[in-house]
Structure formats: structure tokens, C-alpha cells
Image 1 (cartoon, rainbow, N blue to C red):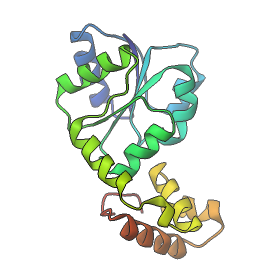
Image 2: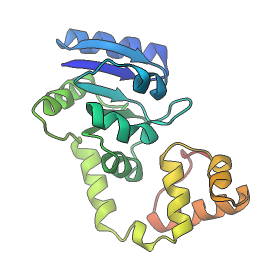
Image 3: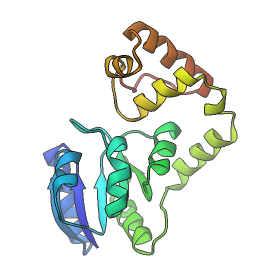
Image 4: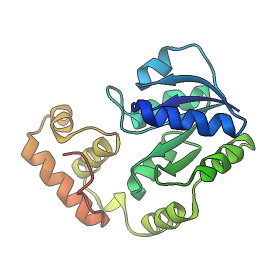
Length: 189
């Protein structure tokens, strides 16, 4: 498969390139920012996308990228909220950066067969998240703040977009995370 990498860390891109090429895949391009990939006319079979990027976050770029090619998210975020949001926005697969290398190759093989890919451990967490009362128990503001967090925005950005102060955005975030049963220590502040 022809793969383009969207990852802001050079050393990670280099490792991914070696792994992909050793697995028989062609790396068409490497980008540090989603905007670079969107501006490029190259059309890979798959974008391998990190969610935490400078500028436009991976979740924000997903809808446009998924219109051009299949998107496999490779992220440090394993929380069901991120996984769910990525699939809603057009991802065809989702992997944790803690995954072993053969898992990445398995994921690409699934995408080549036009299947979705989600490792069993993330699927189990997502199933539990979906089965529990989730976003429908959130207020409109809590949903808006959590959507911003899932898109990789910090609370200052979210507050400005919603026309509220930072402290109010923080309160909405804390309430939503408590309702969803998610530990918020690794999420943007």
C-alpha cells in the first residue's frame, strides 16, 4: 500500500518508515502538520495520522483526509472518547502507539481489504464506553467542551470558541469526565 505519514515527531516518522518499507509498503510522503497533507496533491491509499499535531489537530483534519484516502489513526490516546470520535470523523482504524509493530502491519492489511481495524483491547474499552450511558447524559456545554478536548484543543482555545472563561470551561470538562468515568490527567488543560 502507498502510505503517507502525518506525525510531528521526526524520530517516530523515521521508525514508521522503516517498519512500513520492511513490510512491503511504500511511504509516499511525510508531514509534520495536517495542513501540509491537505495542501499536497498526492493521494496515498492510507494516511497514518497522529492526533496531537501542531496547528490543525488530527481529529479536525480527519473528515477532509478521509474523503481522500483511508485513515489509520496512530495515537498515544487510548481513551474510548478519542477512539469513538476518530471513527465518527472518518477513521477506518485506530492503534495505540504502544502497539507492537506487527499490529500496524495487520491494521494496514485490514484497511487494504476495505475493513475497519481496532485492536481487541481498545474494542473492549469502546464497547463498555458505548454500552454505558454516555454523551447523552452530558449537557450541551459539557459535550462542546469534551468535543474540543477530543479534537486536541486546550481549555483556553475551547473557552474562546464558546465565549466562556477558562475556569468555566475547566468546570464543564471536570463534570463531563466524571460523568463519563474517564480519568482526565492525560487530557489537554
